[in-house]
Length: 346
Image 1: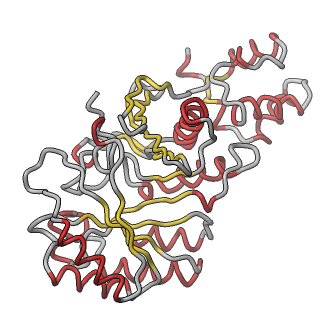
Image 2 (image 1 turned 90 degrees about the horizontal axis):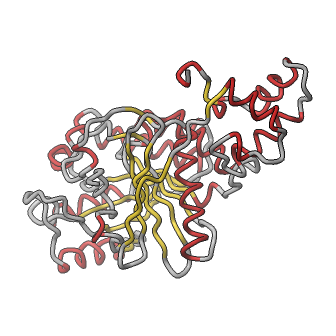
């Protein structure tokens, strides 16, 4: 039965080598299988054409490859592609390919649903069913790299962990997936091209710093006023702004890398002068840049995009205080692929 077989991708290269030695075969056979699993992305043992049929049958008898399947693809008029990704147990997550003239970016998911409760996010309204395994995260990136090459004639250049789920609530599996993505045994991507986005879990941000990670860190802030932040992100009553500030200062001391704050401006929520002043002051605690993100509606009338005049006021205040700021226009809105819209509607 499939359920009794171990997922072969849970084994390290050394464990695979040991397996072959224990059955009287040569250890290098483990290297061959490992390469097929990760660099070549084999989904079935019979795909491993450089390995004898006898060995493939042996692998089939002992292991499974719990690979993902891209169940469906939606293409936006702006070139964005959204994948509905079916996992081995039938659950679905979504991932997105975001193309520009200079780069292609993969937005990948880390949980089925989400651990947190941000009111403005469609994913947060889903039940949190489970964490993704390292290979399931890796597979999303591999699939999007193939799509980037197919549809845009260039390899994937950047990865953002901004899809479904809170990455730091799946800490170990996320870091294992990044290890594989950046390894020469995997996709050999530079960690400088990877950004992990968190809603702000201070304890885990400190752990990232202690683990000396090399990728970039982004924080979904959306308000630098505690009361306001709790209204739109109720979990923030446990992860307060002062605690977040301390964790980010610790991050910068350990890594010497600035933070990116992601910030959506909503009408009647964080569009007042006091909101702007609070953000400017919060940005002074640690070197950072601010991404002002266009709001993507999820059908909740409580959240409406603030006016361009308010956005310009934010920009002016940040620039006056020499805080780098950019405005990020949404991509893939027509297929519900934009930030905060991933909710498995298909």
